[in-house]
Image (cartoon, rainbow, N blue to C red; front, side):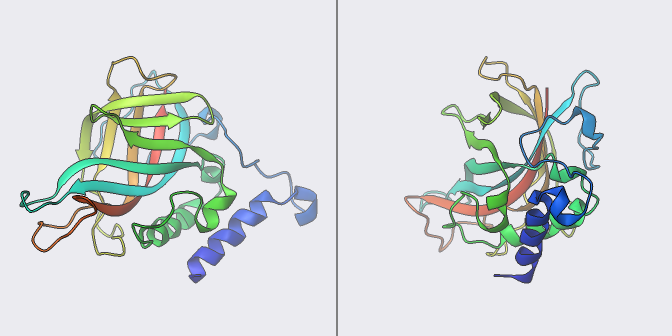
Length: 231
């Protein structure tokens, strides 16, 4: 197991220990938490800011795959959606050491193979699952936060390239864009109005389809990201 993963696991285990056992004040409980009292700021980017009447409700760490079609009839990969497990990191995000841990966590998980299980690999076994990210039959990015009952089906508002230095995945595919997504107005959403995809690593497709063989025409590219949900 990589040393960075071992360090992350140690950090998470310590957060889960009773305060008395560590001789510390009560730490935040790792659980499904609402975010308004956390005073957290969305990572800086050129994306438009959330509307003034929206409140930060959840922060999720996503581990999954971006999917593309790559067949003999397609000269370049075509995006056909994504699938990811969303882990609840709202409580972790208020820890002073979290930015460094999150960076290490993102780069480490991006190096896992596309065949890796999306269910709690390594350190994420200690973090509650918030929900799943998938694409609807109509191709809308969707988020089912079954742990809280919230859900969001979206359309794209804006995107911006990931910052320089963002980690690639094990196949050398760079970080997908940061995005701002809003409720698509079709009535599926509940409790949420907007989500931002930030802090991405991996997920881009190969440059072209020459010599690429997918699984039934689908090529998977591992990615990680943070999703900040507003409602």
